[in-house]
Length: 276
Picture 1 (cartoon, rainbow, N blue to C red):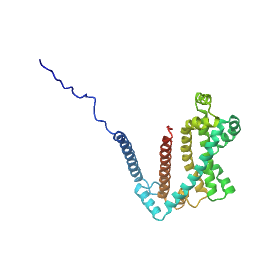
Picture 2 (picture 1 turned 90 degrees about the vertical axis):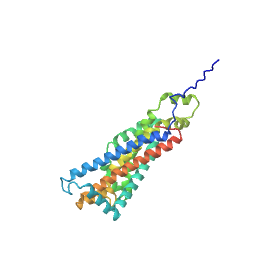
Picture 3 (picture 1 turned 135 degrees about the vertical axis):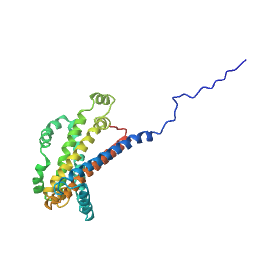
């Protein structure tokens, strides 16, 4: 009697799993590499084009870098970035704090929405630059006028996006909450707010972009410091490279603020089970 002893080979499909971090790290490195390559190509094209023009018309990347170094050494660039950042963050934060409750109330109370809608629809089409003169007359040339203009450009965008989020909440979810005995306040906190968060974040990001547009106009008209003032001063002294430094600083600062807003929002909301 023979006994056939067979050893089953290990299933071919069984393979050691790689950590999730390694799988997600490769696409991330690819995105970073492509971004760096894109920036390098842009600087190269800028340098090649600048060789055909004078430094006054189009300064080279090296000349712009030297201008940035000079402005950093004498403290002008840091003072300008600090002044503009403070004004933007203050006005933007006030706009978000006021805009979100206004949007929620308009979405939950129909008669309030009908009363406030004409004002919001009117003022959201009036650009903040139109109020620069009035802001200076009413609030003076100090910080209050700049902050008020940033607040103006933020509050309507945030309120409208919040209102859109409230109106987009599925009516079946609202009726289910009522059927389970949830009070209006409980329904607002547990159903309406989580559904509205993506719209609020989108409105806050859009408002941040508009805040940068507004601050430059306000600082050009009436400010002794700030990136807008730096750009205007560079024009008066025919320092085009300083203009480029101010523009680059605005773009990098806006990119940084938006990245911080997205990162903080996602990290915070994930703890509460809210994703978007």
